[in-house]
Amino acid sequence: MTSFKTTSALALFALLALQGCVTNPVTGQREFTLVSKSQEKELGKEADPEIVAQYGAVDDPALQAYVDGIGRRLVGVSHTPEEQFTFRLLDDPIVNAFALPGGYCYVTRGILAHLNSEAALVGVLGHEVGHVTARHGANRMTNQMLLGGVLGIASQLGETAEALSGVAGAGLGLLLLKYSRDDERQSDSLGVEYGTALGYDTRDMAEFFKTLEKLSGGGGGLLPSFTSTHPDPGERYTTIRELTAKTQQPGQDYVTKRDDYLRRLEGLVFGPDPRQGFAENGFFNHPDMRFRFPVPAGWLLANGRARVTLATEKQDAAVIFQLAKERTAQAAADAFVADEGIVEQERAALTLPGGPAVRVVTQVKQQDGTTLGVVSTFAELGGKVFTFHGLCAWSALATFRPTLESVADGFQPLTDPALLAVEPAVLKIVQTKRAAPFRDQVADYPIPARAQADLERLALINGVEVDATVPAGQLLKVLTSR
Image (cartoon, rainbow, N blue to C red; front, side, top):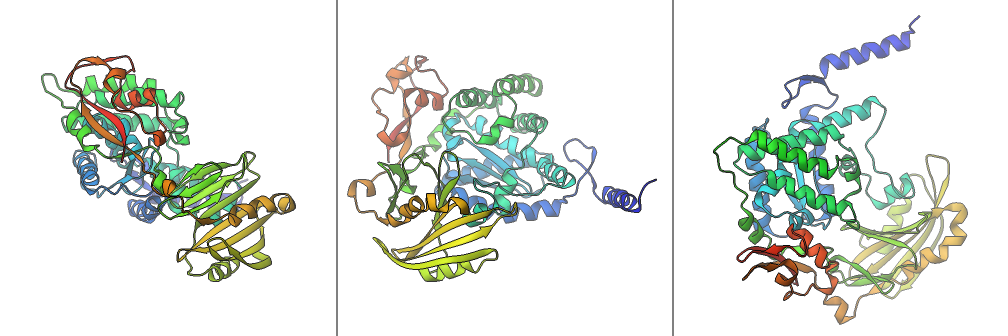
């Protein structure tokens, strides 16, 4: 016999199915969804400021307008030409592009540096537009809702650390909505379709997957972790070339616009920007904000635009560093302990090398029943308030507390002229004067010490082999200091 509860659930699901069936713009088929188009728009609109705050935007209006213009042309030949899209260029060295529901598409300066033609960029942006037009994000969210899932981002030390770091917003949660391999294949196909409709040779899109294949085989953190769920780059290279051959019209010329694209990259920051912080000789230094603090020996460091995270290799202790909203250390401490679930155990006023500070030790109950110990230091420097949240299990606080406190205790103004003057590596576009192997073509352009690159990496971003012959008159990317 079916219970009343089960019958009600089935009735509710049937009602949702009647209300939630829509026609997919790409396939033309009816599909069930719990996320309307208006809800997609709101989710993307809410998440967009968080994405920009997390990664930062490239300060190059001309390059941003170039990316935006290409994106809008792609939308015009897509399955939803009437839909409003937003395209942003993010200040991040990782080779990445992604799309959020509601038409928000992002590419990083890292991926621009590894592309070698406008046609390749069209393929990348067309792929992301395809995710939106095919409603892959809405479908992923619907699947999670039906399975009882929730949007969120897992932190190294659980939900409490997530809340303390300020990353529990919709934006980064949406980034974890991993598309299926079928979704990725469909978006590859749409990228070819849209790019070809604009007259581009999307074989250059396939060439980019050769670069991805090399990066995935030892890129040293240059690719986002979720690319492990994507189809194999070698497979995508073959598939996109086959799709291109089927999609292109016989007798029609298709463009790549290689030189025009490369010239637009002149001066683009390459790799991590040391002006935004770098670790060296046991310290994390931030030239733009003129501060530094020690990094415990053996600890891992992740530097983001909005925060810096330090953690042990076992991830059983961490320090989260970020800028506070309040004007004084005392006000920042008061605001922190006022949050629900935070129980203050100790408080002390301090004087650090940069100015006054307040340290608070708190207990925080986690949902799994365990208790987290948090050693928080709120420090004033240069008219701003900075926060260090040291985290570990409450039972391990006595072990980790000296280390957690030492990071904040060493917070100080950065005064070393050499460190204050560091500059990032940038792309320089040069034209070859003779036919010669790549290694010889770039021999006159030594790679800057902080570029985190070598000859093989330079060849990779140019899409060539180190010993391949490059003809005269060809444009190449080299690296120089800004």
